[in-house]
Amino acid sequence: MRLPVFVGWVCAGVLCAQPVTFERIVNSKAEPQNWLTYWGDYGAQRYRDLKQIDTSNVKNLRVEWIFQTGQSGAFETVPLVVDGIMYFTAANGFAYSVDARSGRQLWQFKYPMPDGVKLCCGTVNRGLAILGDLLFMVTPDAHVLALEARTGRLVWNREMASTDQSYGATLAPLVVKDKVIVGVSGGEFGIRGFVDAYNAKSGERAWRFYTVPAKGEPGGETWLADSWKRGGGATWMTGTYDPKLNLLYWGVGNPGPDLFGEVRKGDNLYTAGLVALDADTGKLKWHFQFTPHDTHDWDGCETPMVLDIKWKGRDRKVLAQANRNAFFYLLDRETGEFLMAKSFARQNWATEIDAKGRPVLSRNADPSPEGNRVCPGLAGAANWMPPSYNPETGWFYFPVREQCDVFFSAPPVYVEGKAYWGSMFRGQTEEKEWGLLKALDPLTGETKWDFRYYKAPWAGTMATSGGLIFSGDEDGYFMAFDAKTGKNLWKINTGNRLVTAPITYTVGGRQYVTMPSGSALLTFALP
Image 1 (cartoon, one colour):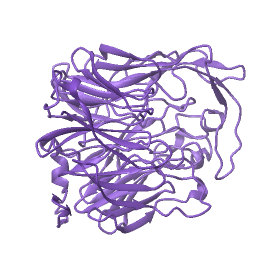
Image 2 (spheres, one colour; image 1 turned 180 degrees about the vertical axis):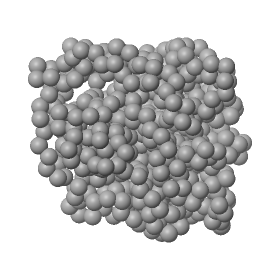
Image 3 (cartoon, rainbow, N blue to C red; image 1 turned 60 degrees about the vertical axis):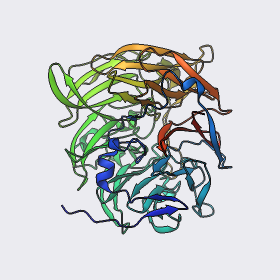
C-alpha cells in the first residue's frame, strides 16, 4: 500500500524538526537522539543507545531546566522529542511545545472543555502522538484532536463517544501508517469498550473494534444474557505494534460491573486480557485473557512489550507483560500461544497458571459477604507504569507494588452515567504497603535483583546503553540505578510523587533526561 506523504518542516527559531514519517517511527531506535512515540519505540522497550550519561558520571547529573505547567492533577505525560523540539500534555486539556535544550515555551494549546460535561475519569492525559506535521491527542470527554505541530493550531476534532454514557479518554494515541489508534476510559461506568482508528489527515474513523462482543459474535457466549451491553472492557492505555506482522497489541480493562460477577457469569471476553488486531482493518487475529471473569479490577492494560528472543532454543517473536494480577507472562505474538507465567509479587488468588495459561483459582479468591483478603489488591502488583528492557543484560525492569485488600461482595444497580461497581474493597490498615524496582529475566521469570521502595510505586522505568536504569518513587525521588547490580547511583527529590516514566534524548551532542513531577517538567544533564 502506498502511504500518503506528509510534507513540510516544523520550525521554531533556530530549531527545525523534519516531518515524522511512519518509516521514521518504525526505525526509531536508529534515532536515539529523539523520542518519537509514547513508548519511545513501537515495541515499548524504552531503551536508548545513549551513553554520555553512564554509571561513572551519573552522580554528577543536575537540573538543567524546569518548565512549570501550573496545572493541578496527576502529571502522567510522557513527552515526545523531535529534532530538538519537545511536545507534551498536562491535565485539564493542555498541550505544549518547548525548546528541548532550554525549556523555553514555543506554544500552548488549551482544549475548551464544554460546560457541565460529566467526566468518568478526571482530566489526566498521558501524552501525544506525531505524524508528518500533525500532533494527536485525546481529551477527557473522549474526543480525538489533531494539532499543527508548528503552532499548536487545532486542525480537526472528532468525538469517539458520548460523555453522557461516561466515556472518557486519557491515553497517548499510537500512529500506525496513516492512522491514529486510540482507546477509551470508563470501564467502571458500564460502558462497552472499543479501540478506534482515525485517518490522520481527515479525522474520519477508519475502523472500530469492540472489546466486548455482542450476543451472537465470537466470544459473546461468555456473557450472561445482555450483560455485554454494559460489559466494561476499557482500552485506556496505549498499545504496541509489530510492523512486520502488521499487528496491534492492545490491553483490555476490567469487566462491568466491576468487582461483582454474578450478573455476568462466564469468562467475559475480552476483558482483563489482550487483543491482537490487524492494523489496517481492526480485525481480531487472536486474544489472550489473563484473568477470566475478573472480580478484582485487574485490567489487562499493562505494557505488552515486543521482544525477539531465543525461547527454548528457538527464535520466537514474543510479548512480555507484567500483569496487574501479579504474574509475568510470555506469549507468542504471532499466534497468541501461551509460553510462560510466573508470579513476581505476593499473590494468593491462584494456585497455578495451567499449561494453557488459565489460572487455577484458590479458595476464597472472590469477594464475599464477610470479606476475603486478596493479594495483590485492587491497584494490582503492576499497573500503567511502563517497564523497560536492556538488550545488553537481557533483563526486564519494572516497578512492583506489594499491597493487599479485603473484598466484600454486594450486588450493583446499573444507572446510565453512574459508576457501575458491585462489591467494595478496603485496604489492609494493619499491613503497610511497599514496593520494588525489579530486574527480571524474561526467559525464566527469575528475579536478578530488587531495590526496595518505602511505598508502592507509580513511576515507570527507562534503560540506556550507559548501563543505567532510571525510575522514581512515591516520595518524589528520581533515581538512577546500575542495570547489572541494582545499586542506587544517584537520586534527587523532585518535591512531588512521581506517576509516569522518564525519557532521554540529545540535542547538539548533549544528553538530557526528563521526568515530570507534580506540575513541573524537570530536565537533567551533566555539567
